[in-house]
Length: 278
Image 1 (cartoon, rainbow, N blue to C red):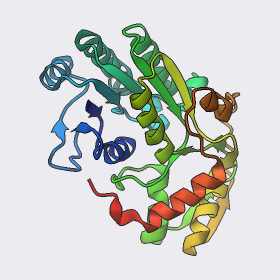
Image 2: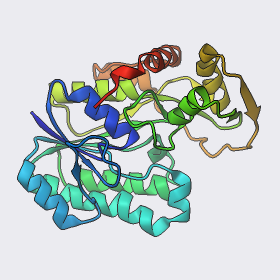
Image 3: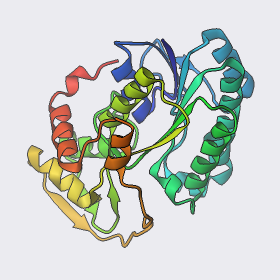
């Protein structure tokens, strides 16, 4: 099976590439950061370039992880966010329909609450894909944590690594409480989607338990003798109802990982980080 990962140099895309590359013929693209020489440069905002690449590769599966996942950046750059996170999806969906590929779209938990520029681009991108093909799966992960070959992006997990490696002060918010998403579970579910040829699904991927950034950081960093300082940013922006994830995944016969198991796996990944090489 030939798989094309759009955004393979991203934090999430790099881990997906790493976890799939031993079993599948995986090709990755990048925008500006080329994590490995095998990755192909692609600007997903250019329709012709997308068509040419997919026509050349003819992948059976396209995993779409090319977007900017920073809600603040999207809020302050709405035109750029619309182009990268939504219009680019239109171009990709058009090519998917033309070449009859399966598409696995990395959406987000924010699709349950479409009140921000970022969340609106996710909801609309899901709709664009759904209206273009029946051979799709939308994944809705939460606040994603876990080791990735990309340790440079400004993502929550990479900030934890800076706390450990660079002794950056560990100051984390107590007010914003959210489900957590484990990066390894995302790739495990993608493997099941490929093995079972699942389609026409929206799959939530996060813990039933909710935690603040402070509690999460404390639970992980204490194993590396890092003290975490709490700060109250009075952020309650994510206050919507979520589905019962464990039951949802059980019905689909897909794996689920709770919060405590997620933390244990993350701690082990940090200790075994040298194995995550592309």
